[in-house]
Length: 524
Image 1 (tube, rainbow, N blue to C red):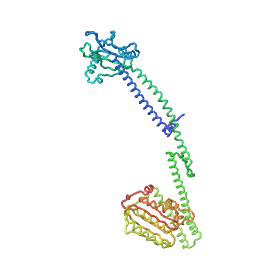
Image 2 (image 1 turned 120 degrees about the vertical axis):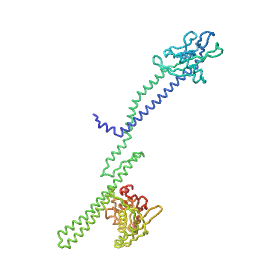
Image 3 (image 1 turned 135 degrees about the horizontal axis):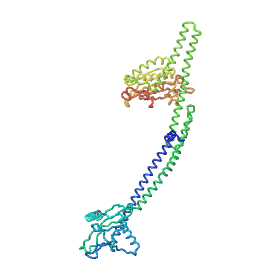
Image 4 (image 1 turned 180 degrees about the vertical axis):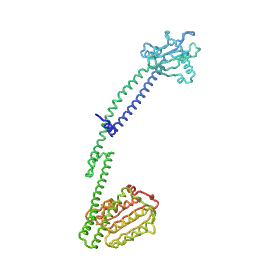
């Protein structure tokens, strides 16, 4: 038994909706075509009826003579034709099948044999009242255009309900006894519309019978076509179902048709590529975090256990606590970095912009890093303008410069150089912060990924620096630059050093007062 829920589910399906749309379009098309054909057929039949009456009227004027035998004799309608000629006989019989001839007062005149000049078919329709005929004769005589108001067309119905198209007008007598003046007479010819109405009725009945069948066949065809069109979609969906977190290497095969579905498959595969990369980064991050957290925790536990079981003097206990605090400080730095990353990704980190002097800030940071630079045997210099106003978040820009300086010092060996340069350009209006070193450099294949979160330069022969930490420093730098509507570029070659260039908009460009940093970062 079909349940209502199954019907609702079927009606919401794409195949059903496509079929319903196709059936509706097909039905409207059939109805429209039927209406156009019906109208064209009706117009054609009507024109045919008018043409037939016009031909009969012209023939009537050729065969009909209205005459009087004497000046006081009655007016009679005489038909002059060869009754032995079948063509002429057929023409006159067609004219006299539905006809009426009266004088100008609406009185039916007789023919040569004394019979009234009116057919039985017209008497079934009904002779119009004399005042109506008199008015038509008056209008026809008064009309300056014989072919205009002198012609009247109308439709009348007989007692059996059959419609007749009537063509009326005036004809003139011979004027033999009227002083040469031709008197007007009124004439009407009719044409039965029964055949026309029957043709239209049969046409309508035929289409009424054909449309439902055609609609059913069209709907079945639409259902089949929609099913065939959606077959690749179902195949792609089945392939997508086989993709999970454990087998992200699977891809949906392309149909190589170059259509919208191939574009959708390509987009989906690219999304899986990004997901696979993110999963790999997350796995690597989990491994790194486990290692980084395990190392200080293990050290803290070992030092405390040693102090608990072996320490005997206050100095021994103090040394164990001091070493444990150092490891706890390293642990807190890891947790803090993870917390900041979480805030950035969730949009909780809000930029607090203010107008300040970047030159003064960079000068202070360079002075702070002079001691670790001297300890590493690295020469740290700065090329700064006297002033460089900017509208930035002080905390985040300090973190950006500090991370770049820390990385430069970490990867530059004894005797190397690190230089900080600050440039303000007017065309276009922008500020550039450049940190360059003469350190070990970064291989070309790793440059596109060094700003990715959790990414660390892998492989043997890499510099020792990237293998330490969590790989969050440069990702924070890139995030801070983007949050300020800026960008960061890197140039590096192994053994020759690295150059980081941070480009920020000058004051007044892209410096909205309070902005969610995560929203800006996601635009990249």
